[in-house]
Length: 220
Length: 220
DNA sequence: GCGGCCCCATGCATATCCTGCTGGTAGAAG
DNA sequence: CTTCTACCAGCAGGATATGCATGGGGCCGC
Image (cartoon, rainbow over all chains, first blue to last red; front, side):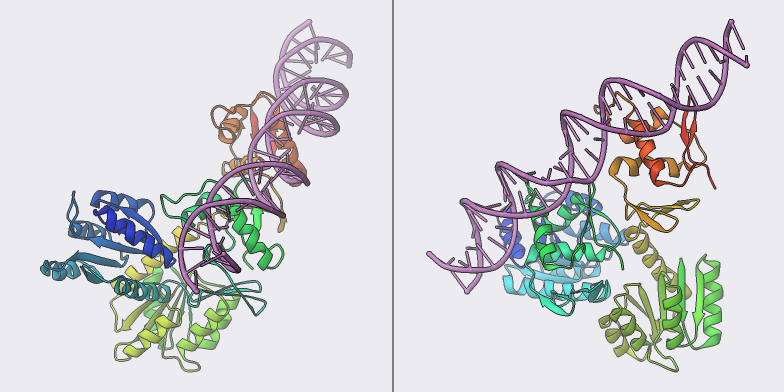
């Protein structure tokens, strides 16, 4: 799941990015409202985590802006505990949840999981099947010909994006954008290595390479 | 956009069919779950609008059936307002949206537009067909008389530009400009070579040469 | 530390492409 | 009708780019 974190306190942001990354989220961080809107336009995340105290524009303003464009992305608002009024205003303007600083990491994660569930139930079915490969997005499980197969995080993500776009060719850039947040771009053939590992676990010819473009799994 | 409407109340169904038809949608209507599955098999729609109260099988059952087959077609569920539990169950089973009867036509249209947007952004499966040659820009795939044909990058690009401008004659310069970026201009008959390779894979006379000008594929 | 996971670097295999050349063809000029 | 010429088709050798395979080492959880 892609999270866009809008937070001006860089040390807090870094901590969050790291912690959430370990939970398997892909976190992009921007320190200001203007950048948040820009990031949103170029690469819409699944969830927005929004601090209200921002240098350039008020967090609530960001929220209003997004909603006025008809975007329904779930938003979790962070704010200092003593500004409780913000809570009401925030929810009024379309926030989905609210967390007072300082907050517990556990709690943040729990609330993100709620979003995640909501997303996966609203967005797409839980099970994607292509040929004899079945991917259960809810259980994070893959089975090949009815047999469960273990998948590390990156491989899972990669396979998932490929299967969700079965029939289309995904460019190397598109895949990398999906697997990595900004700032953790890779400078090697890591992607090819993952593809390599995936192929070992999947039926032959399941992942087709389109030379010069990228990869695809055929729609069946 | 193709809509499959599953609704047993015939008067409501007729009204919807008419109203949605005016919006430019193509609406097929079936009154039962069994027929819905049949219709789905023979002609998969872009969106399914599903009433939950059906005579033969529960609408939710239809939904489960579809999802278990790995079909990810967007589904909008209709249900009576007093059966709110259905909402949760429906979303759990893979519905994408939900509308309580009686509903406003405006709102239904708005929600369908959301699906439409989602479709067009995800499935940019843009297919160009000229004669018996078919080109799918999303899958980077070419098929001649229904048979898949491999295509390297340059040949693909070349064929694509020709087909997208079927009927027009493209000068050699125009084609080269499309295939090569600045700095990698070519200094030989490379283009002719690619044309040669293409002709080998395509039906006879598919690419016409216009002596002194360039090439074209006829519009059919 | 041990093991899984993942990024990185390298060498190898080959598909893909450009090049240069030879021979063919169409259309105009004589 | 013949000839001439610019343009085009076709081929094969070599250069290049691209992807694959493999091993090393860093990092983190246990």
